[in-house]
Image (tube, rainbow, N blue to C red; front, side):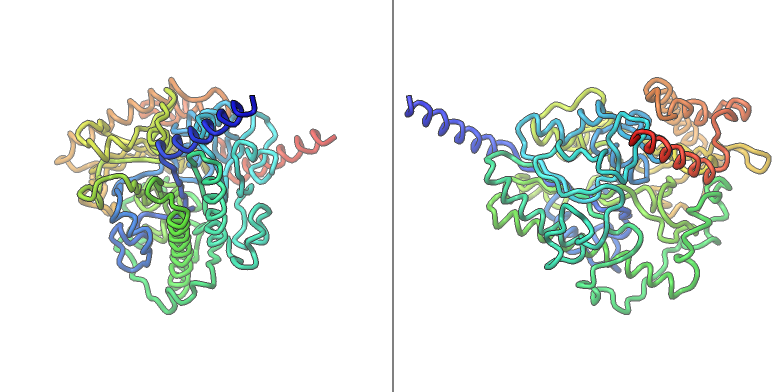
Amino acid sequence: MKRIYIAIFTLSLLLNVLSAQDRPNIVFLLSDDQTSAATGCYGNNQVITPNIDKMASEGVMFSNYYNTTSICMASRACLITGMYEYKTGCNFMHGPLHKDKFEKSFPVLMRKEGYFTGFAGKFGMAVSDGDSWDDKSWEVMPVDAYDRWGGGPGQTNYKTAKNERIAQYADEYPHSTRAYGAWANDFITDAKKSGKPFCMSISFKAPHLPFTPDKYFDDVYANKVFEKPANYGAENATHLSPQAKSGRQYNAYNFWRESEESYQKAMRTYNQLIHGVDYALGMIRKALEEQGVADNTIIIFTSDNGYSCGAHNFGGKVLPYEEASKSPCVIYDPRIPENKRGMKRETVAANIDIAPTILSYAGIKAPDNMDGKDLNLLINNPNKFKRETITLTNMWGNDEIQSMSVVSKDWKYIYWQYESEKMKPTEELFFVGKDRLEMKNEVKNPEYKNQLNSMRKQYDKQVQEISKGAVTYNDYQKYSILFDRNASAEEKKPYLTGDYEQVLKEATQKRKEKQKQNKH
């Protein structure tokens, strides 16, 4: 009998090993607020990102990768669920990701299918079914959903010692970015011992504000003077809608425009933080080599949203313009043949594609609720990857900037829905295939009338999708009215929030009162 047990145990171990060899490991790396324009392989010769650039030269780079909602909480929910925001029901001002949605996210599904899973870094959202929630609370962190957890609530901290789950790395790596690289090394070691294929996700805080780079890299951009892009500053925003210029993205973030000195300091520290993430990528690839698993490990690198960096006088993200909505996206699969490495794909891709793509690599069928597509098809058979447009929404902030747009490889149509005595609903049409800096609104150009009508049809089709698919909670159904090009000001009025700062203050106060009641 003892021999039978030993044989069964040995067979089980052998099957685990074979399973790990058959199914690839997957590493998903996410920076925070990194615009694609701040990455060397995307054409910026002023920045130093050697590991990302090398990964692009060995893998596939998606030239037109967009975040369907360009703000961290909502984007992260889109990334792990493969759904548009109005179906995740998750964003600041709205509410948390409900548990039933999280149960269909890629990390949960992969663990159920035998993957050894781990997460480290800024989780960036709340998972909860309750009315009282706080993304800064441990109570809404899905710690037990992973085999290993090195994450934290809220924004986390650049100081390693102030992040509870990675504090043990603080002596050697006082800045969190390299500490996550060290955590990854330990996770890969444990994952290999488990005998299972693994899926490791790391969400760096960098380069999110406050710009606090790792001093280890102080020499990288010391005394560097960055050239401003041609669309920098308010003088290059006169053609944009008044709605776009009504929010804090245009009226705050003064460090981008106070002086030449403040601009250069912001650019140096922002890019130094990205360089730290690039270095951590190098640490992770080295760990994969040392553990002998590099040949069977797929790496995906992207960011949760872009960053304006002073373009059109904007700071921050949120808006549907190129700098704020686009991020780098690179996939490295060591199994692809040499003659396919270094490919670029121009077709629009998006954060909603990440979850179905990862599941596809793992041999797991994506749930029907996912809106995204498997990017493997775009990589291997682009002619069969059918997609006309991606939809970009902003459902956060003051009423004026809440908007929807559709974007293809060459065109972007934006509809600014807000209407008042001072503002009328505004359309913008940019030929982004030729005018990547979005310097000319072509909406009144008769030469592009057919293109405008085509993009309007794509837009209207997406409004219908929102009408059919928006969750019935967290204040999302209103967008089928607000974003409707045919809705009147009177029809929209009941759905406008008014003073954004006051609404935010009242919501925060209400949440604190509910938390106090729950404690009692």
